[in-house]
Amino acid sequence: MRIFGEAPERGGVISFYLGNIHPHDMAQFLDNAGIAVRAGHHCAQPVMRKLNVPATTRASFYFYNTFEEIDRFIEQLDKAREFFGDGI
Image 1 (cartoon, rainbow, N blue to C red):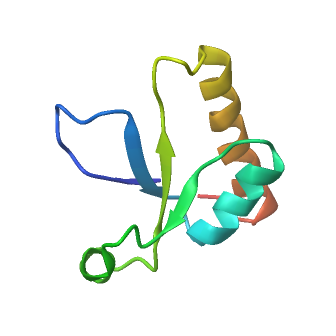
Image 2 (tube, rainbow, N blue to C red):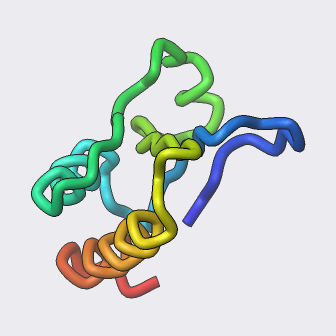
């Protein structure tokens, strides 16, 4: 998994690219599991070209998220890797 951004004071937003799974496919996969994320250029197409990715998936976490929800998110990322055959 590539996580983009290194700001130590960053909020609960994480942009990532998992293996060779297109971010729109990842977003649909997670949506089917009831997990809402955003996928796309996020109004930053020049940055996407610089990072050499077609887009990113963006997940947001805040105080209203439970540890169980975060664990489920991680589990679904593993299932996405299995589903899309990306055995990194």
